[in-house]
Image 1 (cartoon, protein in one colour):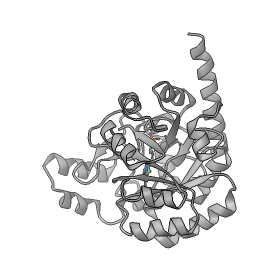
Image 2 (tube, rainbow, N blue to C red):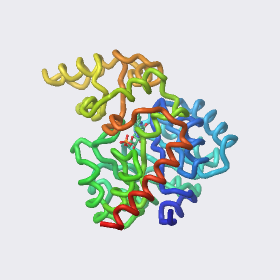
Image 3 (cartoon, protein in one colour):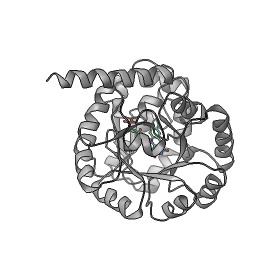
Length: 314
Ligand SMILES: Cc1cc2nc3c(=O)[nH]c(=O)nc-3n(C[C@H](O)[C@H](O)[C@H](O)COP(=O)(O)O)c2cc1C
């Protein structure tokens, strides 16, 4: 693959980012992605600062390739976390779920490259004002927390491309070389994949969660919890309770009560398939086997090259 602004910005071989993911992306997954030529991100969202420190140290031992940390900005101890990231010499931070205005200057001062995740052109323009180094535009197919407006990747990427001159990474529904090529045809210079990497051997999600995911068909995930934070969930007993409560006009507090404590840990990490919160993207229905990251990356890149040759013949 040719180098572009994303490979150059992060010093990576392929413009492929493994999105930070609660309960999935610890040092094992992130270092495997970095060692395979992409950019692995530790997902700080599900880690206490002490746990993140442990993962940062293991990461330093597991790879000498570039890697980073994903920080959802609603993190409760955000100031402490950011200080630790700076003190530990982390080189790349991907922020999400909040405004990049406050922390980007501080991270830049420490020599850290900053990318921020958005779900609309309006937020992309705000990222440009905040001076981030790259923008991740994430469509509503994606796993995890989603944009309220339900804009799909196909609709979002070309419009964000027009709204900003910053290096652009597409996310949401990308789990093959063909989809990667499509995202780049729309104006992206790299991709961020979550679902694809959540379902690898190195992901720290429970075996129960991974198995359930490989059995899903189209339509088995739905967006839910708009009153708290729109989240794409697998339809299970918890989802049914939440959806019924939402239909009856439940308040955010009532929904929180149904969710209970640590719902995503219970579901993704501990493998409680019925009462846990099971976050995954729409493209899950295309993934049927759990493979090592090295194989997934090889298939992604060779699929991209083959699709490019095919398109050249059109
Ligand atoms: C289980 C799971 C957990 C996620 N957790 C986070 C998170 O903590 N922070 C974040 O910015 N994005 C999170 N995401 C979104 C991913 O980083 C990525 O942008 C998204 O999965 C891309 O869409 P895809 O799932 O269709 O590949 C999560 C996604 C999944 C599937």
